[in-house]
Image 1 (cartoon, rainbow, N blue to C red):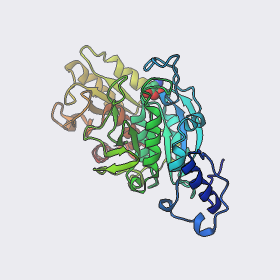
Image 2: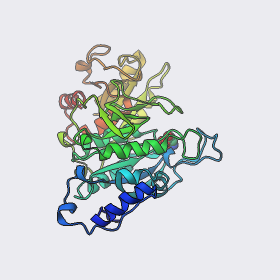
Image 3: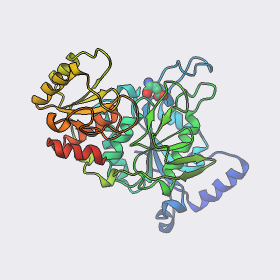
Image 4: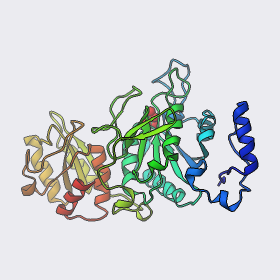
Length: 373
Ligand code: DGL
């Protein structure tokens, strides 16, 4: 794997000179630095950041500059994306690594585990100060929540995407990537869990979700972003409230398979067969994306109770997009031995339930986990 180039005294002078003359320096000669320089703390030197490519729109390309929402996703290699933002080399020593080249709608448990294990491996390397993951926006919320719960490092890990391809008028990927590298390079980003950076905002991977199909301000957290990144500054105003990374009971290095957890979406006339299909597919839990405060239609209660009787955990979630589901309110959860989400969206509850089931099958313990993370 490519080593990071480090500033040597000579190249520092050359770089300083080139910056004044405007010349760009993407890579520097391998370090011949003195031991003191080589071991300089990250704050005294440019941070070493690995930029992982997984695909998505940030790696997309359209036929015309006016194609902002119709384009080919996951076609530009990560090294080309990095080279298209030369300003990045002024704020960090970066190297690219292509792990996938897919639309993020194609993530599954296997790919999630592979990405997480590679991130974990890189974080262990002493010359890696932080990681940026370029990712399709559709499922950034699941990937960032999963990494937030399973990585065992305080080093910054920042997931970034874009809503428009680099070929489009008003493309957002270049600034999003530059900002993501800034955040990953900032000592203040250490110990804040997995972060998502888009549209000048820094979000915790726990809360962030995509709320619009094409707008650049699509990413929202119900309680707001943790902070902003603007004009080269990383500004934090809030801290994550729930345990993450080194504070959780899961270690990505010790996870080789995730239990099957299905999401069944409720609507008027939802077919009970959706529950039966989930059970037949081997689901160990069903997250029921119910209406309102986790309300279950009268014709769905028995199918869900029957699934529970077969050993499948039932989790009442809400399709509303925010709020918490109140235990024993719309349904007698104690009596049915059902669970409720806290504020997690159904797609996030699926990630947490899958991890929880690697630890326990006891309903009371599972409920504690849903309320804790
Ligand atoms: N195919 C979608 C994805 O990879 C494109 C959306 C995007 O990346 O903005 O998530």
